[in-house]
Length: 241
Image (cartoon, rainbow, N blue to C red; front, side, top):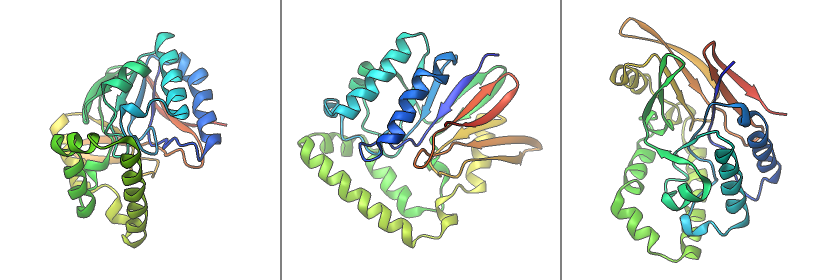
């Protein structure tokens, strides 16, 4: 039975080598049988720029993705909030195709909306302000003009501040809002939405304009590896050993 694979929020880092190995096993195993692999953001814990491809882990991940692509499995990559500085250098090195957020694809006859998911978290006003700033072309150009060591240091500082901020925010603020989800379904005309970002894997049903729509939230890979199998018969979340 044909299927397409979806993953997101792996947050790969040398600090969690066991998760990295699960990812490499996934690329060598289940992903090889897929019609395509979609990575919906935050593949790495952070990405400081394409000139960081010399890092051993970064090079290994790019090489593994290139191997999968050369085996005949197209790999589509969407930016998350941690890896928005991935540009055409990584695209070429990894043999992947960068796709926009949001993107609509036809999955075996079902129009499906793909998103990273952070734009759905509208109640987190602080995050949305930061997102707008770092997504702007002028900010990215200025940031990438800095030496790599300084970019890494600034990202690490931003990570620490983000983790501290999360401790003080009510959990519902960091989740999606119903209004944003409904708007996404209405605007796209899709009846299925797949996204990550919130780290709250689940299947949700929404009634939008009289239609029953399903929303699949992908798992992060902090404690386990999990992917979503989408085929003509529907969707199934699969946890890796």
